[in-house]
Length: 449
Image (cartoon, rainbow, N blue to C red; front, side, top):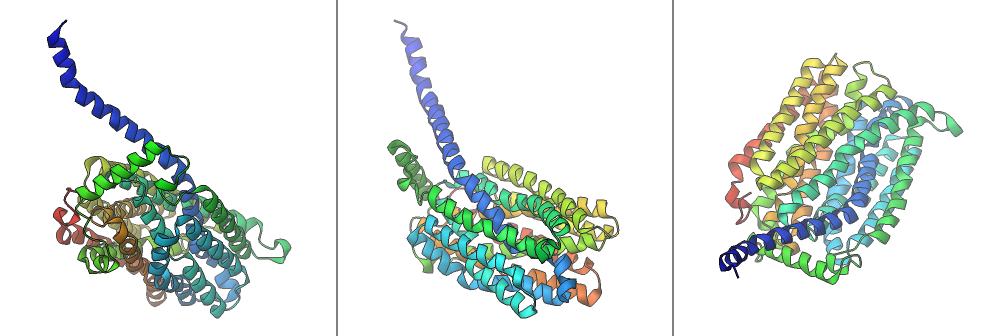
């Protein structure tokens, strides 16, 4: 017997075992990803459509209903008052009743309210319905982000988060063409205007998808009938090890999350990023219309920035996971987004060049937003994560009120979108500086991110 050969084989067995374990883990989380993410992404696409389709609808309804830019800006933004007020209660309820019942409630109610927008004829009706959509939708995105912490350890979470936010970036690919085609070819059918058809056709599917989510999803790995007992144990052990590695075990209460300065800082950085997201979501169609494009052209031109944002979302999220680094990935992405917005101001009369600059902005903003949301789970326990993520989302989501109103006000005051694009660009630069200067790597938990 060759004892030297046996010794060599024995010395290699730990590496072989480690490699096999890594492959098993990768296969397990691929299984989880394919089970959860397609439906969650579809829900997020409809979420985006129903909160931002007013940006396309206003291309017709502003003139037909006599709404000014200021009225539209307030109506677009008032959604976020209801959203902010009910965000944390909704997420705390999710932690108690589970994601299945929560998504059924949220999506059913927001879908009906969004469809009811077709009946709005006065500013007051417009404001009330937008507020109700915000109330009903509150808790969706932070609820899903909390849900992901129940399934993915932190070193896999950025990629899962990137896939989820990819839906947010992909939604304009669907939103633009659907809005352009609907408002062009259904205008006048059954005595309804194009914008009315848009609200109806994008609102009702949310109700159906809420029912699908209730039937398809599992509230936690332990309740997943599609996982074997060994797989459930493996997920639980990996999540427990990840929690211990990041030193979050002692932070168990809502109050702890509220007192954590990192939560408030990340919330403010989210606010700065979302200023750019929602300013573009609501006003990009109007910016393109000011360049002489038709409604149908605007719908298809809007696809280009969305595709660019998706690509950056996936590449940067995956690279951030691989390198286990967040701060520089976020900061550089935010600066790229700022550059794209600033450059857009130089080409306000050149649609092709402006769309390319908006694509650069979308790449930076999408990537920064994805990386930022991979950070909170690094230092919050599961029990604190529901409240902490909801608080971050509430702070950041308030930008949805500020951004449309600010852009509308500056447009009315100056007659141009240029000042608001400079303001949004500055906000992105500030977020990058805050990440690097005020949130050191040591503040993100024991592991270096």
